[in-house]
Image (cartoon, rainbow, N blue to C red):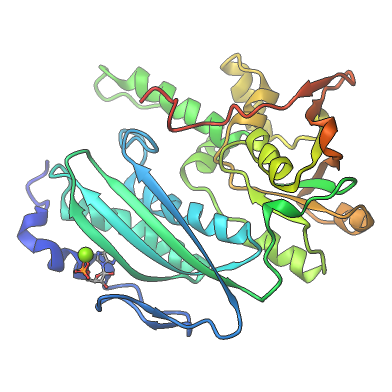
Length: 346
Ligand code: ADP
Ligand code: MG
């Protein structure tokens, strides 16, 4: 550890909290009282409030050997914003709770918070509280996000109806291939001094893994065009898993066409290099933070014109089940093989 680094004990808990939270000016008038009291005070007038929370554990959800702390902070906030947008709501406030082991210095946490601050600036979200504790098992980050939505405008997982069109924003599988690349380079680097990985031509998949964005733009575009999805979910665990969530909650089935799944060129190249099935990577990869949603068939013409939105299939009656239609027309049942912290072997 470099000598200029500051031990957390030098600042103490309250000194640390002050330092980490001092450059977070309040941006939303709904935030009546932020950090500094026993609780924050929020006011939402006539709107409904949505709340989501995420727990991130070192060694399970992130690996600090190849994830810079700024990016980790940014991504920790973004994954929560993404959940709020997936409800057709707007994120307004977060609380950030930390468990920190003694190997972390104040400067490490400064970097984590600079990422959180950047996400809050870009997405217009206020940091209104949190908690800070020592930990014996590395870094623990828990973020809770609060958002608002006009009454009656929230979009749940449960509203899909047979004949609805299934749509997805952006492209899929890139974040997963980025992770494969980082893990490979990390294992190559182990035991080699001054190892410099060559990431040229792979910037997109790395950015998708390390610095994802939440699709605020997609939610805004749908609103602007007067399209209200019947159901929506963000793609965090993989398309297969999210499709099954919508099918289960809406009591429907679905057909998704293999050749309609949007996949970026770099993702395809990387899958080839790893000898992986590309469609499997796109269906089960996860961490894309794209939006998967359904719209009534009557919106077909409008949706067709939307930039960056792909129609990938349709909703069926429940007894037809969920299936992927392969290029040759055969149907493959969709199963959730999404990334799961409980069986990742950690
Ligand atoms: P309490 O004793 O009520 O738990 P704390 O002393 O832990 O209060 O926290 C003081 C203030 O700082 C509170 O407003 C709390 O929400 C905020 N806070 C504590 N830890 C963090 C953190 N890691 N990030 C942001 N805010 C924090
Ligand atoms: Mg506390």
